[in-house]
Length: 388
Image (cartoon, rainbow, N blue to C red; front, top):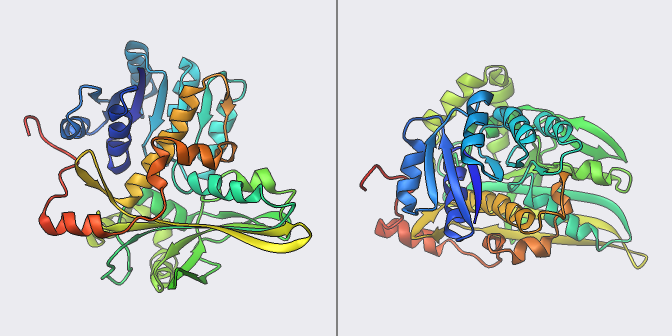
């Protein structure tokens, strides 16, 4: 068994720790700075392969001391994006493999710089978008002789929207605000450019249902850099229900809350509910030449909440945790295959889907399981106090 340090016992860290520990191949050290947070998750899982720690990972000295005492082979950061550079630095200094979920472009570049010459793996952006969407799009790209356009679209949406934003907080509020407020990398007419968030609004129809999509930051990951000399147009947009973008423009731009993100975070967390009844929509479209003809191929999937280890987990928890766990599993099972900075598109879609964790991306899911479990009051708990 290999020892893995998971930092952050929030929505995603809770499932990452459970998936790894239940596999039988990993001992998980789950750490969080909030008193009791990691213990609540560990108690809910009820596994002797998860150990809980109260740890301020933002303090490099404290994190280094933990690593030297408990000797994990890898660290997984489920922390807010602004914590990740210090974690990566400790991983570099102590010879650990490093994985994170960041969507932040500047953080990823800092991790890339830290990884130079490393014998261990530094794999940021291992979640859903960036992450799995880049792996899916890269697979389609391989089917073409030449490329014209690559479109990446992802959305984590409530199944039953009933507020003015038509949205629920399904993951990190800091992450949502960051992607709505920062410049977005795109390729336009063969040139890498920065485009404005919340712009580029378009309609998109998937399986007969109408959505909107608009520019958000970070979702393109390193795919643009990998293919900038081969593609004319490439962009990433977030999928939402129609009308959401207009409301967010009012908050972010009209009321200037992009410049007062702490206030915006308080507003969202006090007014927008969380839910386990969500759906994650994954859409990649590649256009180019095949056998001399202009063609398009698509990867389209809708992932719904599922019962894992006797409890209901949201679709965004499942897709994000499955992404990082499958990448970690592939890397640690072939430790000599990868080293240094590893982009998501270096992983093969078939390998991810065949992986025991990546199988959570299987096609054909429905909302029936989550609806029935909620109606019966049988969703279970993702956190438990001592003795529960």
